[in-house]
Image (tube, rainbow, N blue to C red; front, side, top):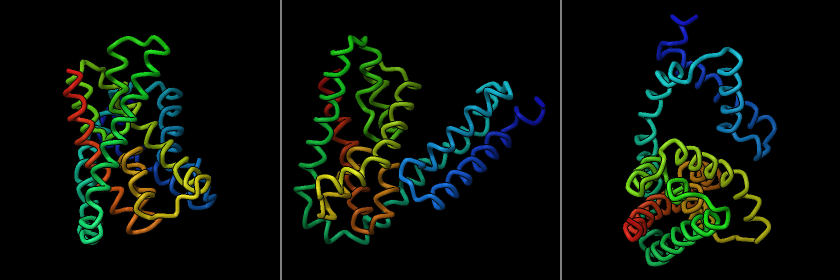
Length: 226
């Protein structure tokens, strides 16, 4: 058992199988709450607990998969390039929207942390929850946060944004494709952007731009807190 589960092959295999199942379930049901990423967690975590497999064994393969996070994010540049004329036309709105989104996100987190009397380490860990993982970890580390909590917060934010985003768009009747894309990228980073891509090319491109712009704005705003 140990000889198999402690190898990188185990972590890679169970991750691929779990995500494949999640994708199949999502396509069959078309329910937003059955997000493939969420289903993957619901498969992997109980499996590790039931089989009494140490997290360190899973991470042998999980870390390899994580190496593809940055390249996968970079691929979003293709849709950005294809919509470059539209983005250039609305550049001021993109910058202003990203700055407002980052400021509101960080301020709301700070106020909630103060309301629930969380310590400075937890507050710093949660502040960058709405930006992509590499940037969030960098901001968290600079503020003295806890990396593992930051990663969890980023993942949960992305899943919630992907699930609730389309619902909120319908409730508030947001029909502008640019606004839809900006909302996903600014609020739920790469996970939300993958949902925006499904909605349309314009939404995907603007979400990708907003993802990067909001990340930069969050980094800059965090400098005021150091």
